[in-house]
Length: 395
Image (cartoon, rainbow, N blue to C red; front, side):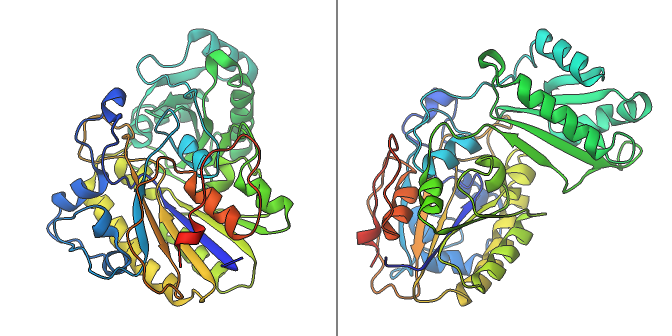
């Protein structure tokens, strides 16, 4: 064991350039990080710069550094798809060969809607692809007045249900989502996640989504590095969406976050504790608030705020700690539509004890991450997983 604790932080959707097969996914000349940089006048990320982020992806305002503090490269996705679950599952060793179903163009099939209405007792309104804020402005007043239920999807493989916390009730919203999750386990309707989207407010322009969101994900289709660590007695601590993405599999502790900044604050507090194993953090606001809403300026500010918190985390790392910073897909906020984008993701590996960090090879799978973590702790990856470790290169 080289490192006593490993912190892996996923900056959700911060891709660093189109993959070779990006055109097959409808993505041409996409680059989330570079295009964010080009969209703003100022971009101050000194901690990420020192680690070597601009060495991976050239940025307009941020120069590369001659002697970066971290090992750096970019990773390609081997699995089919460009969604959150596929990206995270691959990180931990799974190869996804069949993409999750999306209903972006058509809405959900009528027979699914009818079955959901019958089982929940609510008439369904919406049933189309939309952003969360748009659908609330359009239909929330009707939902409040009638008790009808807003169901919608997005560019992701998701079925989302809205519920006003005062009139619909959280317990009822969760009950309906559990029914939807059961129904969408069928192959013809199988989506990656069912998401409860509670909100408050009484009229258009006042509606706000709350932190009581809950994701009902599919269980991973096999054991991952997380299971291997847990089964060998190591701590596997999650922050943010990680619990939902893996449906709790392989975790020993879960921490729900209210925002990406809150997620970093939680990670910093965990770094002040004694544990042995992995702290796995997902920071979703980059994707949900800025990528899907095509707001490069908001995205840039979120990265700057992350960089400040990153500086705090770095001060709390010990010589036998390893920090890995990465992403799960792209979501270029300057591109058309509102979908994720098929991109390489960054890989930064830092420890205070590193002697001469340098550029690593470009690897063909995100699973390098899970394999490296497992190898560090002397744990064998589960059967039928992919990837290889680079722990021996991080010196």
